[in-house]
Image (cartoon, rainbow, N blue to C red; front, side):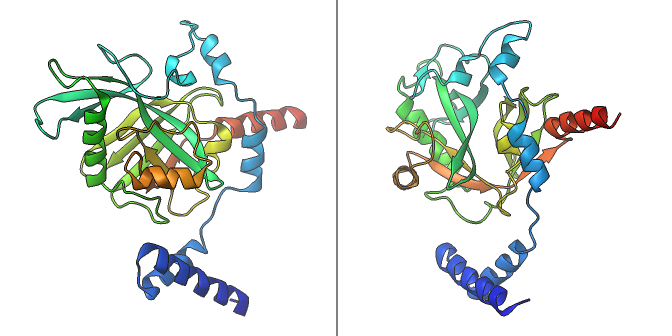
Length: 272
């Protein structure tokens, strides 16, 4: 290891220790582990970035020939619904004041970018309160935030993976088809488990960071979730007020990437 590499690791370890409240030896071990991390190859990134991705056309070609409302993010703040709509993950949330009463949050998952790397936003577009339950979303948003906080979602985006959390993606049959996404905690709490659209260019980069992908959830109460996470200062402000909560989660992607298979097929045809 060169002197420059040694100095870089030492400086990175000091910065990580300060940011995460670690002692230096612990931070040093993490940085040294990160230094051997294998991210996506240039070939994988190029194939993902150049493949044909058109999920709206894919949906239009299906027998139902309909574009799901959640796909176009119909509104910015959760609206009341008498029953959970299609194309969302129905997520029960018990009331902190009366656990026997549960609302259902109709959650969607959408890919985003935070600090030039992949991030994921989980948000309800609708909520269905229990019979006789409180009508406003604010109560249920707070209850959801409290539950997420208990399982590691905090007031900032950490550099380290949140203990107990895993995310598993199963590729769809073609690049424009939805993938199945499951986000779960070791204690049995399932945050999301449903098909969702994850672009190849996003999926190809989920292991850029050795600790995983920031998963941002909200709204907790008053402020809607930003349409994108590019304004990191505003995101930090919303995390500080618990309008958003976040955790970094390691992603495992199963199955061969369809866009790589498309490229292999094309290469085979040329060779023939």
